[in-house]
Length: 217
Image (tube, rainbow, N blue to C red; front, side, top):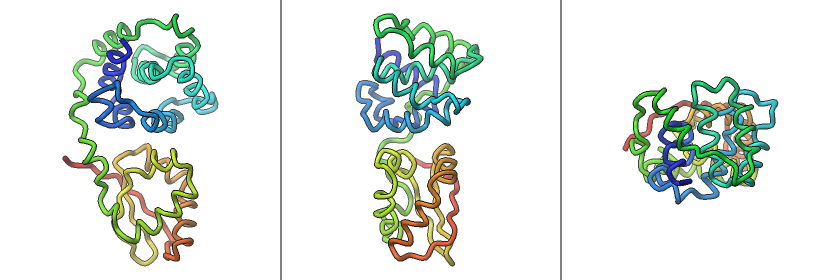
């Protein structure tokens, strides 16, 4: 049942499917701790009311319900009938593990309300996700090494794991990411860390520019 719930969750919510990656989408039983960490890191962006400590609610849901927490989150953010995603997710998380409803019924209703949704299989293959442009460039590698030490490993994987490097000109570092969520998070929380990492690597960076890109197969 849990595998079916997750499969429906990835179909209903492309945002969550993109976070866990195509391997987990293809086989929900293969969801890894790293996949869960990426979803957890994005919870504040997925749920609208940040003052509700959504990250703590998700951690609690994981502890009580395991990977079903992802399915609960998908329903909360994608069900058009849910007026308050944060409250709804909190209520779902508060169920006793054996008392949680069969979420497949929820997904059937949501899918009917949404109509046809592109299947998760349309997402890029794992190799494409890892092949960020310029990821192996010596300049970016020199900056990335101290950056990993400055940023928590889970956060680095979530926000910088798919960052592309497009050159460094006159102190302007050009980066890209296929995720708007990652771009916004890097801009709001990690620009100073990138600048400091460049300083540690003795590379002059005065400004960081982050653009969105569309990965190809």
